[in-house]
Length: 341
Image 1 (cartoon, helix red, strand yellow):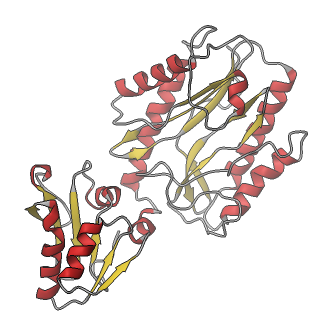
Image 2 (tube, helix red, strand yellow; image 1 turned 135 degrees about the vertical axis):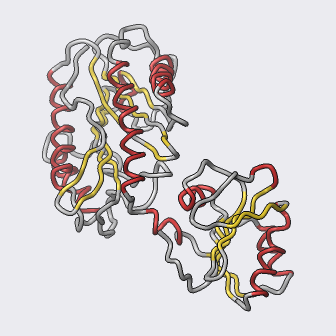
Image 3 (cartoon, rainbow, N blue to C red; image 1 turned 60 degrees about the vertical axis):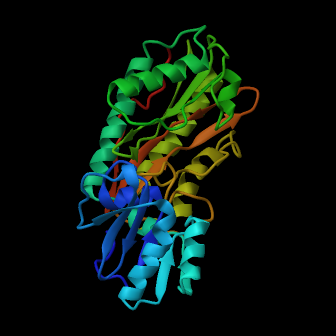
């Protein structure tokens, strides 16, 4: 969490960062943190009933924020204020008008603390992952020729909603040649016998995201499809076994990429191995080419290698995992073996 004694006050306007601080649903306002004060400025009717962590609640009009913060700075004889990068201009302007000159805009101050998760946060991620696993087990009974990608996406979201999820990630359902597109939006294309069907989806619980990808074959898989699938699975499992605290981000990506590039499918892995995940679907340190970031215990990342062959199809397999000192804890438990329906 944020240190109790801050060198300089900070005004937190990013709503996701606010949620991380007080573990409440998204509310509209701003949080002012300093050595002397911890205040939530709420915009009228959006005031929550209570806030943990000793935050005082003040209800104001949004346009009064700059004036209120300037007053706090004068009262505490503080000259320097840290602002997040998304601070509204009217707040910045109001502070300057009231004589606050040492305004420092700094991205990533709160995000730095969000990178590692505590056990409560991991429990939310695990519950969201349970919901995505359940949706996968249910959708397997629905997949058949003639069902459209959009219908599959709607069914996945329906199953997750029934289990109490709050929101959905972008739901990707890509069948046949569309499965060669890593970020394909579902369409009215019907599923056909022999198709790869890639489903990449997730949901939130208390704001925390799950993210699961599985690829199945509608009917019997051909030899090339089996070879693609087994290569991706080997890359995913090799990377999962290697993941632990102290590993370098780009080294993790290379471990999976080397498996794929050691086969006839060299060059067909078109994206990074994984991203950090939490209150944002993409946040913090991931498993990224060119990144020298060191993975720390408590980080949560996706592990999602893929092979994409235009005009033929593709496979992606994804789980999210908690980085631990001597390995990792995978939060999703859907079957990794090739499923032929």
